[in-house]
Image (cartoon, rainbow, N blue to C red; front, side, top):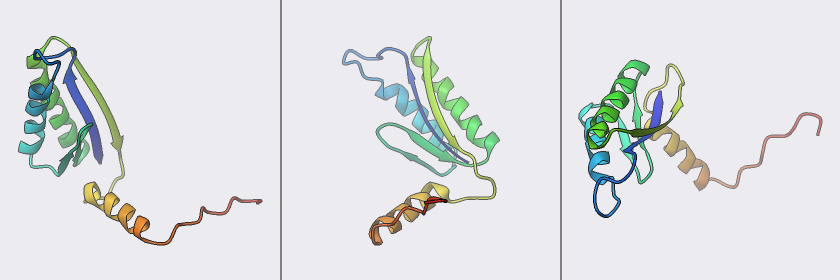
Length: 111
């Protein structure tokens, strides 16, 4: 499974309105987990089985809670049993499709 999540304390944690230190604590938990992961400007995506992924998300959320009494957590999951390597595999397939000729949509039944 892939889980993309964003976790941050509600409100700011410094004078400039930034939550980067709190987010860094969460990302550190993810990276230390040893699970495949990717962080961009909006989400961190992690790959693994249900129990291990959600244990990391919980630990990351708890780490952010040290910065305030309220935490915001947004997540999206792609649950597809029997697949691994999808953190990079999905992007590789997309890049291959982009490099190919423009695809034509599948035909609609009855059209």
